[in-house]
Image 1 (cartoon, helix red, strand yellow):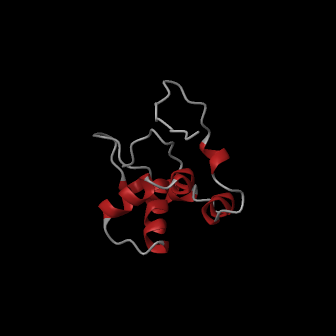
Image 2 (cartoon, rainbow, N blue to C red):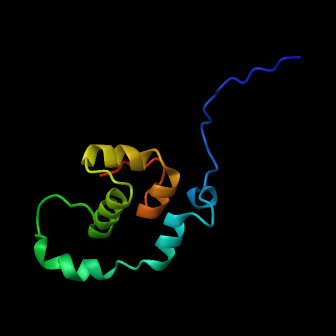
Length: 101
């Protein structure tokens, strides 16, 4: 008997991004050894005290690093690329339902 899968979205998901990224994934390993917290101190003087919040400097650096490693020079293509790859979302610290900058 032939089966047919019909897609039905779940209202509530039990989904953990960290469980979906393999332990030997390059970006998971890189996230484990790369400490970029010094960027907050180094870039503090370039940010104002008023106005809209900017992109997190660590997230910005990680996006630039992904662009370099994946050979993507367009910002729009980089965001599109990162939004479709679970391991990249995990690397930059975003969840599947978070909107990328």
